[in-house]
Figure 1 (cartoon, rainbow, N blue to C red):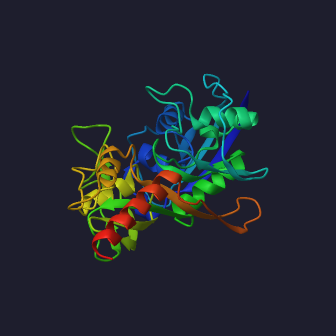
Figure 2: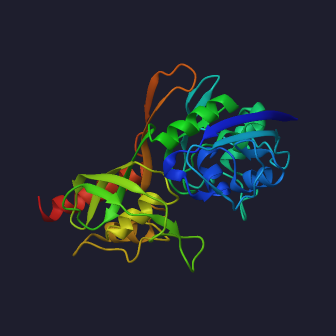
Length: 320
């Protein structure tokens, strides 16, 4: 089974002067880079009607046209995995993702993922690129995600994400006492030596986060972060970059910090917290069909509520 793909886009001036494959990845982000590159080589993605190579430079104002077939991903298996569905209609699905659930199959996670669960819950989603997944949460990050159930909905949601009209707000617990909120504008790219990690680096992709303090404790802070962009590991990398890494973060957390004379329960909880303390709390977007602005909120999960309660008890015991 396959669906016809017919897409057309004008190259904006800010993308002019880049390689075709790089521009295509920005304009047709609902499709993987490898798939787009294959389509370019097959002549299915043209520039002003001409077939060029993936590495060729394109200029602002050029017209990209894609005509191809989207093959169903038969290698992905539907699995009856429980989903916490916050909202569903004919076009979109909003879920509350638990910790431990990988979003997309990859090396080491061939199945048991959100994608496998989606194939069971919405079988026809196999015909939507990436099974409707338009943004991701890390395996151990909890909270709200939107999934497109149709190609039309996916295209519209990707457009909103690219134009930054989707509002995604997270809450996290960081190591250190944050004095005030602020803006982090620091480009992010893949780490030079440790390829599973990301890092702030010159030449990385633009990444912007806005953060504000919700509550301070003796050695930690409850922080709210709004994403302006959505780079891989963005909040984790950005908060570590300003020396306030997330509690429990195995990749970017650094050394854990224990408040002086803290209770044994507090010490053990901070030492053994099993994941990055990060939750996608609020999601707001325009419905891809009706255009209506919609919003959802996901309460903090039990593990973060428990950790916050311990931090409050510790503060009150020493400060009052």
